[in-house]
Each structure stands twice: as structure tokens, then as C-alpha cells.
Length: 412
Image (cartoon, rainbow, N blue to C red; front, side, top):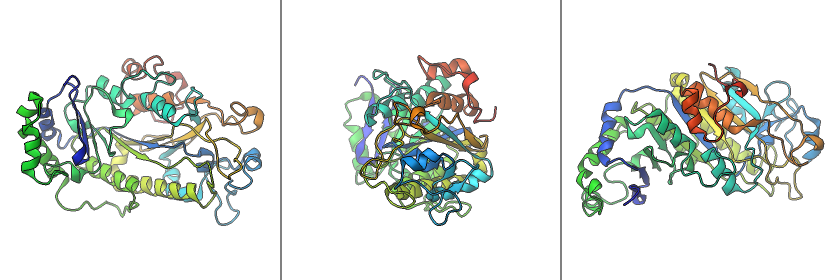
């Protein structure tokens, strides 16, 4: 077994061990009580329509380009945008995030994205998660490279994705876990009973795993003990959507508050590709934004004081075309909006707005990009997670970080 990568699909857990034996899991015990900076990365898969998510209602060309799906200006009745700064507003179904804006813990980077012009979902997601636009040969993801250079190896729970499969961002040689939910990460999982689960290890061909299975079981029990046997109850009146996305954020909060050394968490939200009948204040996009915003608002409320050391970062592979199509939807675009939420962000709108007039658009059709997404990632790595410029340059090969172009979204 050359890579020692094990996917325990029947339990809903994926464990990347590349170079580490399961005995490594036992060090979870030593991490109990550890508080460190936490990054929660959220990927909106399918290319969210950022122009209807963060509405440029002060731009007349926005309304000319979208006669059927534009969000009305603030103060114009039901379904109007929620005003932010006199020019931009939130989609009305994003209203749960308004409190975060008001307390200056929500920052929005406009006209952000990849310098690569692809409109392929697969390629654009790969480029963003590897943080190497235009390069398909990159083996690891940017979050895994951060873990590699930060030497965050004292606990296998330093990086956890609440996904059924390991996301591209966390693939690499540093240990990371992917699980459907914490309840599946145990000695029973989906394998029936403890004996059958241990039997599966007993017949493993890899002697490294076979010889240390009991230690792996002990570590799983330790995690179960740390997170508790009783149903998790969110704090501060937080109510998560009872959707896969909402429940994945609930599990992240639960794990963060268990103090097991979590530093990187990953979640994803899908179904953002609305070519037909996207809708405006109501409809497909509105329903997805409702789930998205209520989930993030509940997460921030649930984590509470820990938000001082937590950063929530949202991203999507690219935006949508400025002009609505003939099916009252939007086609694949270019620039988009990213959000950062946390106790150490500088709340407000960041980035240079290029305008939506046809002559200002990328290739005459899309929101132009004025901020490379790697500069946002780089600012998170340097100013939130604490990597120095030399280490950060290793996280973004062929690009490096450029502090001079940081948008100062995060307080130094």
C-alpha cells in the first residue's frame, strides 16, 4: 500500500494517514482542552450568483441587465434588499446575517475570484481548492499545505471536513478527517457491531494498521467521550436549519467546543447552478440563500465567545453572468463575492468595484475581478492563522502572498 490512504466508506468516515499509523489517533487525548485559532471554510458549489447574494442596488446597470430577477432597492417593500452601506445590500433571505454586519464582524470582498477564465465547474473548483489557477497537476489542496507547513500534527482532529468525501482543499500528506457526522465516527459506525468492525481491521493487509487497530478504537472512544453521549444542544438560542448544510455546521460547532485541537473545519453547500428560473426575492436562489444564511448565523451564535478566535470564510468557484438569460436564470460568469466572518475581521465592503456597464465587464459579459482569491486566502493564513510570509509562500506555490495587496480585511 504505497500511499496508506484509507477510506472507511461504510462508516461515512475518510481518514488520510499518508505516513502515519492509526496510533497517531491516540494523541487526540493530549489535545483535549486545547484552544487555538479556528478556520471554518465553506464552499458554495455550483457558482452562486453573487450579484443577487450581495446586491449592487446602487448600480443602475444591475437593473437594466436583470429585468426579471433583480432584487429591489431597500425600502421598496417586501422582497427588497437589506441595506448595508448605501450601495450594496443583502438578498432579503440573507437577513439573518445583518446582525453580524451591524456588529462589524462581517466583511465582504467584492469582485473576487480566479485569474483563470475557465467556466468549467470542475476545473474552477479544482483551481480554487488547490489555489493554483490554471495548473491541473497540483497534488494537494491549499488547506492541507497549510497544515504541512504549520506542523499541526499533535492531533488528527486538527482538520475535519463534514463531508462524505475528502474535499480537494484538504487532500495531501497532512492528516485530515472527513466524516458525515460525529456520531458515525465510532467503533460501531455502519458496520453492525464492535466485533465486526475490529474484524475488518484484523484481516487488513497492511501490517501497520493491523498492529495498531486497538489504539485506533481507543482514540475513537476518546472522541466520543469528548463530545458526549447526549444529543448536542446548541448554545445561545442558536437554531440550525434541519438540512444537510445546517447539520454539518452544527457538527462543526460541537467539535470546536469539544476542545480537541480543531484548527481547520470544512463544509459545503451545493445546488447553486441556476441557469433556469433562478428567481429573485423568491425562488431557487432565495431558498438556497435562506439555508446558507440561517446556518451561518446559527453557527456564529452557537460558538459565541469563541468567535473571537474563529474565522468563517465562504467561497464559490466563479460568479454568474451580469445579464439574465432567456430562461430567467444566469449563466456561468467570472467575478464573485467572498465573505469573512469573525471577531478579528474589519467589517464592511472590501475590494475595488469595477462596475457593471458593458464596457466594464470581463469579456463584455461578467463581473470583472479586482482581487485574486489567493490574496484573501493568504490574508487568512497570515493574519488569522499566524503563518509568516515565508511559510505562506509555500502554501501558494508559484504565487506567494503579497501583503501589499491585502485588502486589510483582517486586523493585523
